[in-house]
Length: 398
Ligand SMILES: Nc1ncnc2c1ncn2[C@@H]1O[C@H](COP(=O)(O)OP(=O)(O)O)[C@@H](O)[C@H]1O
Ligand SMILES: CC(=O)OP(=O)(O)O
Ligand SMILES: [Mg+2]
Image (cartoon, rainbow, N blue to C red):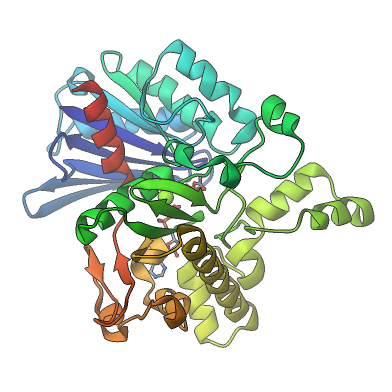
C-alpha cells in the first residue's frame, strides 16, 4: 500500500513515502523555511544501496506550494516513484493536538477537521499548519484516504492523578485544562522497540525525546503513565527555544512589574528561551562548540539541559516504582554522546551505569550503552515518527 507521510511544522514539512508494510522508505525529504527567505527542498530516493539526492532552493510561499513541489519530485523525471497522484492510497498526517477525542489514528472526515480546528487555541503553532496540510493533500491527492495520527494519542492512558492540575474542577470541565502530552508517536515507537529489545513483561521504561522540542515519558507495560509536556508543548525539559518548566509567578511578575504583554510572554517562553536564550543558539551542535570554547552561557545551557532530564528520571523512577530501561532518542539523544554521558553521570543509586566506551562508539541502530553490571539498561533507539504514522495508517486501512 502506497502511503505518503507528512510531518508538518510551522515553517517546515518533512515527508516519507512507503510501500507498506515495508519499513524502508522509497523516498524521503524535507521542505525548509516555507514562507521565509532561503526556502529549499531536499529529496532523497533510495534504490537498493544507492541514494539519489535532488536539492532545490527557490522561494516557497506556503505549505500548498511546498506539497505541489513534492508531488512533482515524486512523479516527474528520472527518479519518479509514482506515475500519478492517484497512485497514493493514503496520506498520513502528524497532527500535534487531538485533545481527549483521539487515542488512536483517525480517518479524516469533515467532523475530524472540525475537531482539529477546535483545538487551534491549544496548539497555535502546530494545529493550523497541520490542518492546512490536510486540506492541500486532499486537493493534491483527491483519491487518497487522509489519516490523522495525533501526538497526544499515546498519552491518553495517563491516569487522572498525573493529568489533572490542582485547580478548581470547572477549569478542566469547561476549558479542557489538563496535561495532554506530546511527541506521543515517538514515545510509542521507541518504547515498543525497547520492549521488544528487553523481551520482558510488565516493563518499566523512561523514554527521553531530545529534538528541537524535548519531552520524556514514563511507560509502564507499554502504556504512557506520565509525561513532561503538559497542557501545551512548553513545560518540562529545557528545549531549543522553549524554557520548559517555569514558575507561573514569573509570568505575574513580568506582567505587573515589567509591563509585558501576553504576546511578549509567549514569544519569550516559546521562541527566545531554552538553549537559545541561555547559550546563544537553539542548535545543540553550536552550543557544544561554544561550551568547548569556554563560553559561560553555553556551559550553563548544557548544565540546565542535563540537570532537568536527570530530575525527571528520578521522579519517573519513583512513580514507576522501578526501572528496566531509559531510552535516548531524536536529534540530540541519538547524536550527542556528551549529553547522554552528562545525564547518566552519578545515577548509580538508581542502578543506571553507563559504559563510556560503548556510549562513545555508538553510531546508529538500537544499542545498549550500559555496563554489564548496570541494573537498568541504557538504550539509544533512533525514532521513526514517519514510519510509525505509516504503520498506524496501514493498520487502520488494511
Ligand atoms: N551530531 C549531533 N550532535 C549534537 N546534536 C545534534 C547532532 N545532530 C543533530 N543534533 C541536534 O538535534 C536537534 C534537532 O533534533 P531533531 O530530532 O531533528 O528535531 P526536530 O524533529 O524537533 O526538528 C538540534 O538541536 C540539533 O543540534
Ligand atoms: C509538540 C512539539 O513540541 O513538537 P516539535 O518538537 O516538533 O516542535
Ligand atoms: Mg521531531
